[in-house]
Image (cartoon, rainbow, N blue to C red; front, side, top):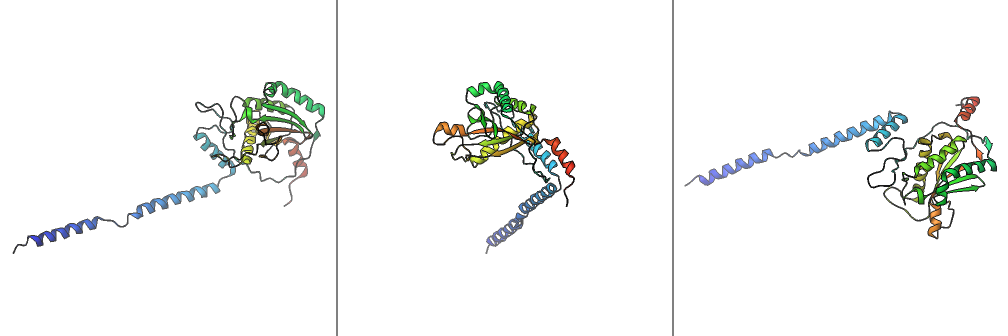
Length: 280
């Protein structure tokens, strides 16, 4: 009787045994180790973030923004190829933890003061006023310079057209010479908006106001202590939103020169010194 089949069977069992030895049932440990390493790195970064000051985080944010092609501190950047308008960086929120009383008005602008301002602004903005891109209006609160979406922004975007930014800077330079308190207000129509950048008209109006405010600070060198900003969305319209013309009027950014002027940084610092430290 031949022993060939028995020998073949034994050889097959030996091969299966060798093959089974090579199989590892702990390969999941590699992925688990990678996951734990990444999780550890995340907690290290979070811990480091809590150990740094807001100023350091601001520098880090600026470095990241510059690394992606932006220019730190400028609301109008170089345009991409084929684009006719500038991009706006996401504004960083700066929290002021100091507690102080609101500044008291230091003076009242007269009608003649506002007339002088209107005349000076008209020399710079006259062409845009004729094209209905800018509007100067007198209100009980003061003087309002309106920059219409038609001439300064593309629809549903906070990016200001690069060739129009100089008008905002020139207007800011004129107002700066008079050391005036300004309020920058963003407005929109009531048409719903929801895109990759803005979930509502409120956000869009605030982003446009921030664009103008940063131009005033960075390029017109306006005193930041004399500026404030607000985004009103569709809730303070100039005209009814039932027509294209009315909606166009409502899409704007206003510079409001208030009659009741507030003190600047120097006078506020002097008042703080006179008042002394806040009791604890």
